[in-house]
Length: 292
Image 1 (cartoon, rainbow, N blue to C red):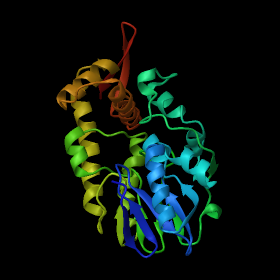
Image 2 (spheres, one colour):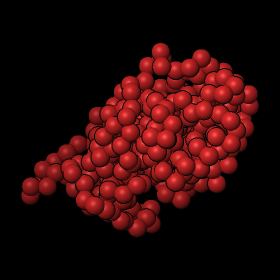
Image 3 (cartoon, one colour):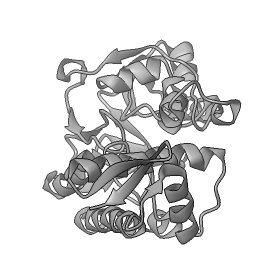
Image 4 (tube, rainbow, N blue to C red):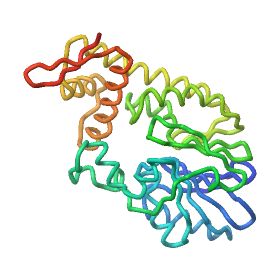
């Protein structure tokens, strides 16, 4: 775990639960794409960087989820490196309590305030093209997170963050966290248009052809929407719908899943309502959803 893998040219990644990209901008200086989920992972990453005789000068976060920014604080403290994130992702990186707050919809209970959802604060600067080193360009990949980006190196390696999930993950869980369904589907549609020799998703195997996995993710996302619509032939309030959906997927509910899947289900409902495929009715002071 956390083995440094050479992809090609100056492009590398650390093998970890959420892959961490590394790009050499010259003989001595390197930048990271994300930083892992905690200080322990960051410590091992920094040890490898030092052993190579390199110097970490910046971290470019794809998005602000804790498993991608959890190592920022340790690395920033021990190297003085700068941290960059796009738009609202910079705000969430500076104030990571916003992640569990967003999932819960209010100040989160302690069950949602742990390292997998609540990273240590780091100082993130807004990411613009002027902050990128030569050889690295950003890719707009919103959907899974508000302002998520990927990065394309001049070696032809595309780091895709959480723009899509592995087939194994989707087969196991059926529903994965998505902030904005419409943007997510649009990102999936555009992924094959990114000209790269190797695509490195954070939670799937690197590949030379991203189109089949993008299509699988698209179909899986649409399948969840169809399952929701079938359930909503009879009006349901949110809690009843969440229970019915997770029962169908044989997915036991706990506090973390309530936050992640619950937030995603609300995203589906908002998208379906915007698309004119569901509506709401108020019954006995319950807001109920109903397929049209």
